[in-house]
Image 1 (cartoon, helix red, strand yellow):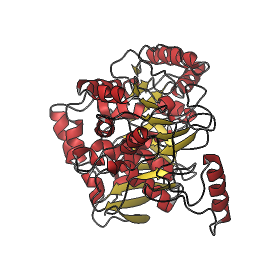
Image 2 (image 1 turned 90 degrees about the vertical axis):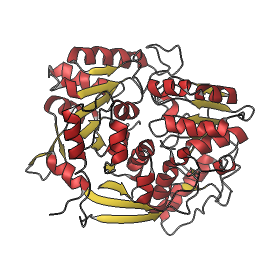
Image 3 (image 1 turned 180 degrees about the vertical axis):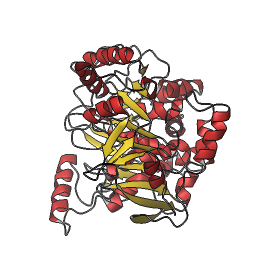
Length: 482
């Protein structure tokens, strides 16, 4: 009998089918962060429940930490210090591995987990953070949960879940230079809607996906949740194996050989049936940028803001509201729109390949006068590697602030943010109203476009700066608020 990759992973972790039709799924690993993880751990402590298998639970300080070089427990978020101190106390008491602020491995949870080899093909992994699907790029079944679900997983290593349907999206063709995984996923969401994946576990496949490096695949899976998918995943291959080889939590010796033989079986069988399939031709795709207040409000950088009036009255009203909020008009050329700030960071686009790509644009150039530009590496290991390669100097000499790792201004939760109604071009994953500050107007784009726009002071096609193909041309990239 043929099976999809999703079916293989789900069935291997199925404990039992419940009377109400939901499935009880075994959870291999749980990841927490200080904003929601501290809530889950405090709940367990209040009920005197122990964490079952704490060696399979990990936690990062990432969401509300300051990213300035001299940071400590104090943050700009009201009561932020309380979250950090509580998380440290709870994790130590429970025996959970914590990547604390003074740990060289600290960073954004969805960067740290693959980087350390914690997530591996064939595993189930959950985290109280909506962008946990990032880790599906490793061939794992990873999804975001709430704090109460995290409590259940921590105590029982199981979760009750309604089984999603299956979808395969094949991205075919060859990506043009300066077109990245971020552009691919924005194009998908713009074409099929922010609810296009609702109720589905989505497998990404096709020639364009096979050609992506592992970090770019993480970008693709990261934004599966913006497609409303339960999760996104990619079958492991040679690139996956080589990425994991030698990482701290990867298997070693005979266990490595056993693991890689198992990983080779993790792919959809020929002829396996999906509930829905889509094919996207990427050969003519150009760099994408959002114009509105949803990731589905994306267009090619050479395009114009689309008309408001549609057959769907609800969508028309949404577009009208978005344009009013963004202070744009239908028919406006998106390229050339002035910006006030540029941000490179988040679990979507803050890995070393992202920084290399942005640096290729910035090298020898300066950001536009009066424009604030910030780069926040996704982990302290990414930061160290970038500094070893001299990328930090490229950013600082261009006029970017060079930060320590954390979620930073991906989202505004009462902490550091951009100014009232500032227009920002950002490598983050959400452009909702006030996402990055009070009525801040956010445009989502790739690291290349953010860097190019910072130089020009307006939304700019990165192909003007990256004329020749390079290895980084396809480079990438929590439950709310992540």
